[in-house]
Length: 123
Image 1: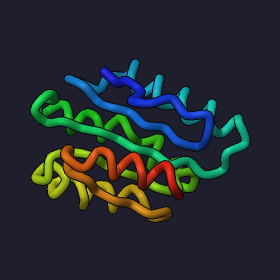
Image 2: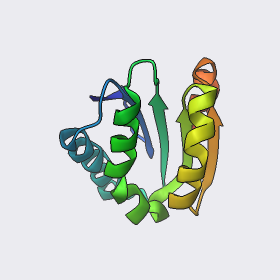
Image 3: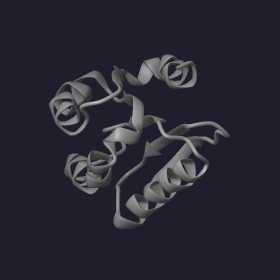
């Protein structure tokens, strides 16, 4: 399940992935992207929070398989904040580096969620 952590009237999308990531979640994320782009934002700041304690490992793989559209629309991602446990981040960094070649990417431990919000909010 995917939920918005905060709703912004700016170019920011902040989401939390809980328990699983399904096609319905992917469609919802696509909708969020489309709405922001239709509001004339050319670049989006994206915060993704993952807590592997709440997501079975197999679902993390499915999550990234479903994010093909981010790879296809990476030109619209200006800043990316990935928030997860440190060991999860270590495993995901190579994948994120492969699909995102533009913008600034920062990785935060779950305990640093406030810093992650500042990163996407102040750029």
